[in-house]
Image (cartoon, rainbow, N blue to C red; front, side, top):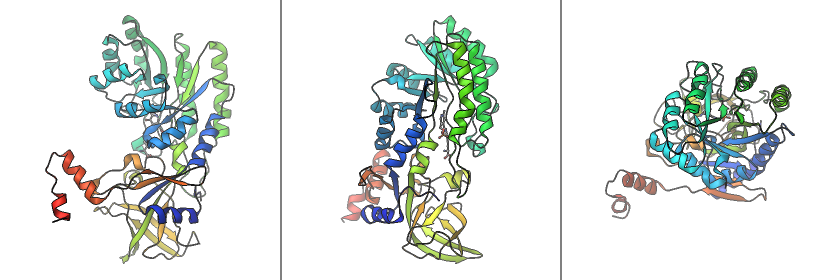
Length: 418
Ligand code: LLP
């Protein structure tokens, strides 16, 4: 089991900042960024971070300090990302059903537009300032930890069909627009890496037909192991298998060709943990529940994808125990279970639970469902100090914000200070 911080450190964090609390570890984050950057040494490979995994600006700062550009998927992410680089071409904007307004703004910002449909390419080519772009290919090869996150299959909404790629180049040429790169992303949390290798090979072959191309972006999807005992994704093997294909492509191609990868999960998931406090213990039918002060409004993955996150009781010294618990959230839906049938030590009200590997797609997918507030976030810096990187707002502030956004008079003050 992989806790990024010791149980003592996590308990100290709660003493200072309360629960629910996301805690991130800067040294794990730096170490993971380094491990990726050391791959493919000597080859023209650049790394982008898929900021949808976690876009806390303090974390973006650390990741960009490690030499990562950014993969963005909305104009909002573009705007946020622009604060972390001096060169907008370090930012890929992988559009998905983009509006004309979003396209116009993105072109003006100077980021790289990665276009995922023929009709959007038509609109792009008509824009007077359009010079060059990347296009996203649908490789008809998909993979992912759950059907909802497989993107490369032929039936998916993403990318441009392979048989339309030739037409895309003709269209661009007829408007004096350059297609400078090809992109592929087969899915997230890849289960069978051979699918990724197949897609990489396919893209290299496809790129052979287009001399003007300057790069291929192979997307993200590198998996992490969430279940104790599960084998870690083998980075060395990933390099060993892909390097020869990249090298032989470059030998033929020469020039300034470049490759990109854009992982999110692999970088940040294991560097983050969500801490919650048990406030209810109950036996119901054949079940024993530990009720907590968090839920799917803070970590949606178990409810949305049946995703496994290991949960450990950090108030107890032992990790395993004789009791089987369902760990329940505080959202008013019976599906709000963070873990089911977990072996844990006998637990009690007041105990602290750590939900592991929650750094990716935790906070970015959080919501205010049931009108609830979000967790605070803290960073354990390299120095060992904790730094608060997101304030916990009060229930009053939360409701006040809601009323303001709904353009409704603020009656909170009169309720709490009658
Ligand atoms: N590039 C593109 C174009 C993507 O759509 C994604 C993820 C990535 C890169 C990064 O993929 P990663 O390396 O993180 O696997 N909410 C889901 C994951 C959705 C991923 C969406 N796209 C989850 O919690 O598992």
